Amino acid sequence: MQSEQSFASTATEQQSIFRVDNTDYYYGAFKAVRGVNLEIPVNKITAFIGPSGCGKSTVLRCFNRLNDLISGAHIDGRITFHGEDIYSKGVDPTELRRRVGMVFQKPNPFPKSIYDNIAFGARINGYQGDMDELVERSLRGAALWDEVKDKLKESGLSISGGQQQRLCIARAIAIAPEVILMDEPCSALDPISTLKIEELMHQLKENYTIIIVTHNMQQATRVSDKTAFYNAEATDSGSKVGYLVEYDATENIFKHPQNEATRDYVSGRFG
Amino acid sequence: MVSPQKSAKSNSGDYQPQLQKRYKIDRAFQIISWMATLSGIVVLAVLVTGILIQGIPNLSFDFLVSPPSRKPEQAGIWPAFLGSIILLIITAAVSIPIGVGTGIFLQEFAKDNKIAQVIEINISNLAAVPSIIYGLLGLFAFGRLFGFITGGRSILSGGLTLALLILPVIIVATREALKSVPDSIRMAGMALGATRWQTVRTHVLPLAIPGIMTGTILALSRAIGETAPIIVVGAAAFVPFAPTLTIEGLQEPAFTALPIQIFNWVSRPQEEFHAIAASAIIVLMIVLLVMNATAIFVRNRFQSSR
Image (cartoon, rainbow over all chains, first blue to last red; front, side, top):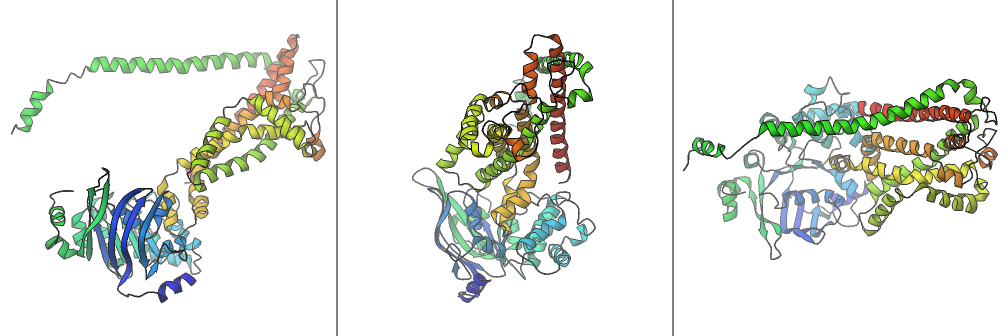
């Protein structure tokens, strides 16, 4: 509760929810991404695109400090959420993750009932309201309610891949986050399931800020308001380091890219 | 440009599938592995049949509940049987919480640094140390150092020594079971704002329990068959009274167990003792069978409830 107030009181800009200042991302001594400067607008969808190994997932996973779980992963720089440095001592990563939800590349429901998949997050975060109502509301919010309302007690793994991914979205929104991070959420899904999730994202952005990593450039044009293009370049030591090439409104990135690498990438010439 | 059809045609001559030869190798390997399986089963069958023929005639309720005797027709295994069961209870009660707890700590909480690696190598090595060495360690640690608790060389010391013996096996089994739980489950839990322990308790551990159970019960099966370490900590060959589950009973310096009773009878010259040794072996095998069946049953129950 306290940290929530401090988040709110120190918020300087209403428009951007995250702000990344000249940040380097490391795994041990290996620098994975260098010098990122970025502002994530509130209640918009921001897409991260770029070739494999350019570090877009790394950047994404630092917004909820999930990279803390990887031993040796750390950053050098400043990432602020509502103006407060998320890596400062005053910020509890567990509380941060409640407010910054995440959906992963492969659907990863818990091997428990559909109901418990959603109730788990609420229970551990001390939800006081009516659990049945929350489960229904979350499933409706993820456009899944009608498909699973008669089998809430069945395993979360018994439904199709696309439904599982929407269950993961329902699970994420059940704990009332402000931001949802999506790490290639449709890459394991068929086109129809993908379409459903994209439609869902348009609904979700009214209440949530979404950051999505995608390999699918059409998807970025379909869903996102802003797009960040990352690229990787070889360093002197022979390894690769990712960097943010261009960040602009999605339309500009795809129609009028300023950078040559961006133009080549969005026109499909590499990557 | 070569048309794809043409290039495919011109290349197909380069391949010689030799299907007949490959199937023959398949078949040969199948037979070899089948024979390997068979030889093990045959040896086991011969052993079991021999023991059953020799042991079944003497098997009776009286045999189970009688104390050993100088006369083979009156001898029974009650003190040894109860001794083994009590050893098993002590061993399980001590080794499971410590072993599983250590496994969880090392796999889920400990940082992956030099100290953790050293501990890991040591635990793996401990699993391979001969059991007699554990017996000597148990004699020193439990028989002497903690003698004021265990009563010196007693069934309690024996159980604690066996617990020590199987601890590394349980730790390794726990770690392997936890390792096989996909990381995506941990990520999912943590991303919802769960603490590490909440994630482990609610999601990771339930998935690992079948593996932990299997490893633990196999380790306990090993413990119940051990002879050397409990001889060192005081198991005697001839104990005419059954142990009791009281503090004094556990500290009682005279105790025995099934493998020791069997060894004692087998090493006597009279044929009649060999026969009742076979009967005792049957009882021991039944105990082991029941334990392993429990392991399989529990594992299946947990797996189907997912």
